[in-house]
Length: 469
Image (cartoon, rainbow, N blue to C red; front, side, top):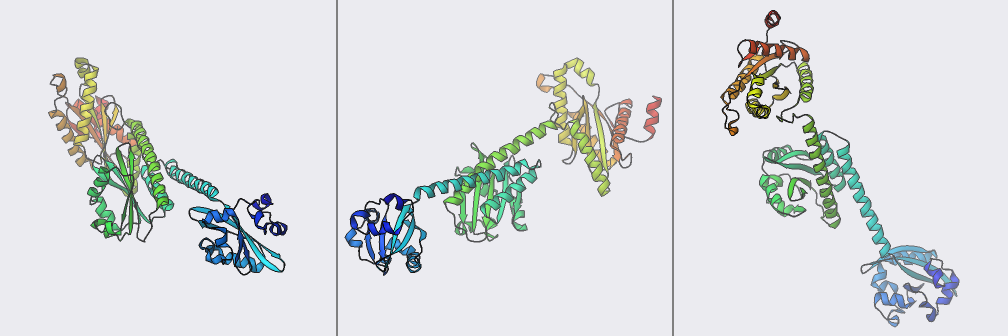
């Protein structure tokens, strides 16, 4: 009988037998018998032990006077009235039970037996599975952002979107920690004023304070946010700062916020902690990806762009100029008498000269200019949105910088280097990339032929002069 009851099979015959006291204690699960008036007829030892109450003290009392049974009062009354079994979950202290209610009739009287099956271990397993599924969902969701795009900006935009979706925050922004401090990478749900002030570095001190601490998570509620004027103006009720770290190095901070009230609990903390770990992995992967891409487009000796990148950049610049009706210029620069330098000082010294010259090119050119090593001792520069006259001025500044520089000083030498350069422009000289290269090269040849250490702008007469030469 006890086995049948435990398994949920409870024919009326069982209850007719267990109505007698000696048989109640056969059943090891908590069990209580209630009459149609709501009075407790009897309870077994397991039920009394659960409530720390004597059997005599519980018999004859109304079940709704027993605190632990009050939450299921409606279900008990409904089962008595309908004569149909019912099931409801019940919490007692820190344990969880599933209460099976079996109504039956005996001697024209209605009774109901409550069997309390403990389900605490099953709920714990269920919660572990739910937590694990949530973790896998977060991992898969965030990893998908990295896999789906090769563009770094798009990766971080998608990451932020998915983090906001997972955490149910409404506002967020990501700041990465670089050589020049924290930089706003992307954002969602922010006012233009907050974007402007963050971009201007007005929460840099706030970020630095987070960087100086080792806490894995920071939660700021309304009282604390009032102390941060820049953020307080946004009307946020809660702000979470999630550091993204590799070892002791802070790579960045993800800020998540809501304007409405939100309770911070263990579940939210665990989600944010998991997100922090996943973001760290993704940021590391993005850095590796960026480094691999940089190496693919960078000349290993000079650390300038390589010729492959230059050709791609030239095609893009032509397309941009055609679309927006712009002009741009192209320069080819070649070291004068480089073979003599190599023969005199050796190839290692020649490599050092190339590296030093590359540093001068980057220093003297403008930020939008694209400087690349074209091959050997030749370099190319694209001057975006720059007419030939302005490109000539920049090129002359570069030549002067090179001419003033003393090379190989660390080797106890005093070597002077000069270069010759040629410039052609789009669309005045040509609208075709290979022609611009050819004309720049022709102008550079004329600079060499005319005495070296100078810049020459292409004109059509050079072709005839070169052919005659």
